[in-house]
Length: 235
Image (cartoon, rainbow, N blue to C red; front, side, top):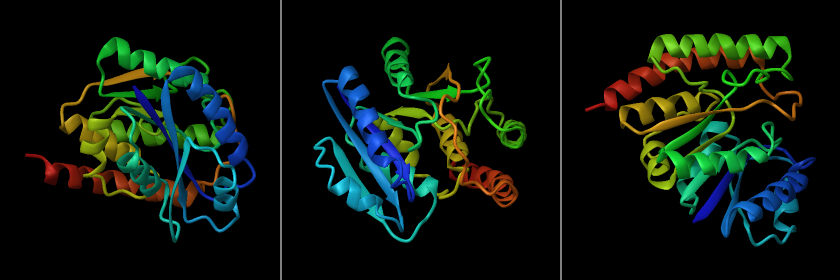
C-alpha cells in the first residue's frame, strides 16, 4: 500500500526541512512505499529552493503563483497524490506524527473512506490553544453543525482519505480558503461516504497566520455559500 502525505505550505522556509525530515522518518516506519506532496501556495520566500535542493526522492513539489489559500493547496495535493491513502496536515505538524499510524490502523480496521481528527473527542484537544482561537473554533463548529447537521470537528487540521474518495470529493470542491474542510465533509456526506473520527490534541503550537476577525467573517460567510453549492450539486 502506498501512502501519500499532502502538506500545504506558504512561506515556511524556517521549518520546512525539519518538517520533511520528521514526516519522512515516520512514514518510512509505517509504509513500504510513500510520498510527501508539498504544495507551495505561491510562497515569496526561498522555501521552494530549499525543498528542491534537499534531494529527497520521496518528496514531490507542486507549486503555483500567486497565493490562493489553504483550500486550493490541499485540493491540488489531493488531486495529484498517488497513494492509496492520502493524509494531509499542516507544515507545523500541529498534531505530531504519531497520529499517522493511528489513522492507518483505523482505515485497516473500519473500512472507512475518510478518517478525520477531532479535538472534541480528546480531553486535552484544545489545551495548547490561546483562548481566542478556542472561541473562534468552537463558534465555527457550532455554526457549521447548525447549518449542515454534521457533528464533526470540521476544522481540525489532520484528515485522511482513500484515493477514490479524495478524487470524488476534491474534484467537486471550489473553496480556496480555510472553510474548504467544511465543504469536503459536506460533499463526503452527500456522497454517502463512511467517515471515522479519532481523538487528537495539539502537540505543537505556534502563532497562526489567520487574521481572527477577517478570516472568521469570511469563514462564516463561506458556510452559507458552501451549503448552497453542495445542495445545488446534489441529485
